[in-house]
Image (cartoon, rainbow, N blue to C red):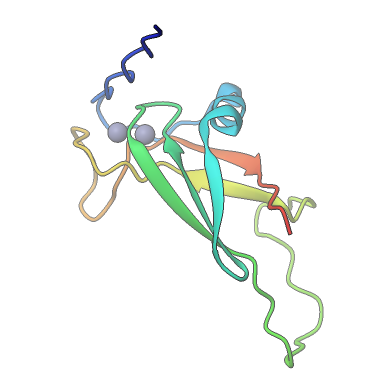
Length: 116
Ligand SMILES: [Zn+2]
Ligand SMILES: [Zn+2]
């Protein structure tokens, strides 16, 4: 008989915008992706910083029948179009969080592979 370990508790540290190279690695192992509908992918998992459940919607759809030419380059100059910016959207409490924000302030870039 096996007992699964209890889920790690949420870390309610004060809100702080931060990133870390380990976030993407952690999230790559724990996040799950599901195609909600064509071109729309739902990514869910525990935030690598605060472990709160977060959910990100990625829209990959390119509308057929309309062509505005090449897409403008991403503002950060990244040349990898499959690399997405993730921001913690944990709904739980983090002290000092600005009005209208959610999450603990953690953000990272991660490549999302979606099975066709
Ligand atoms: Zn978080
Ligand atoms: Zn949190």
